Length: 182
Image (cartoon, rainbow, N blue to C red; front, side, top):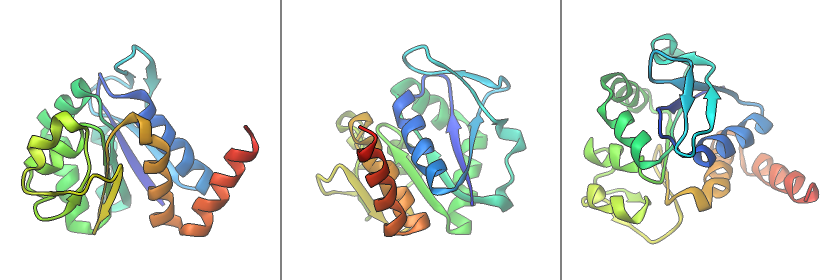
């Protein structure tokens, strides 16, 4: 299973790394994708990540899931990218899961993909989900869309992705493995 996690300068590090880690533990082929021409992407807290690939190298045919981390600066850069919007549209057309956390659900909201759907996002970005049903849950799943409020629920967001892609037993096993390591 190939999962593309899109990174733009200014992404929220925990919102990218925690779900990626949990999905790797489940056996996913997680690819960190730089949406720029640089393989190195700097997060909102100046942590630089070496991406696995550039956006031009993404195979829409191999995409089984697409993840958009938040961070207000990173989200704006994702939102401004024609290539990102094309990947989102390809994921919708293919019917693969799309995860978005914190500010990133606003991109899906602006594309009207969350209209009439249950959704969650960082409170200051809810205006972009005005046609969505904001339930107050920290993580929300509706059809192919998994949305979450922010960095504080990065684990819950990641667990929901694992559950949907690999089943509840796998998600519970990973939770138990992590708890036993604390």
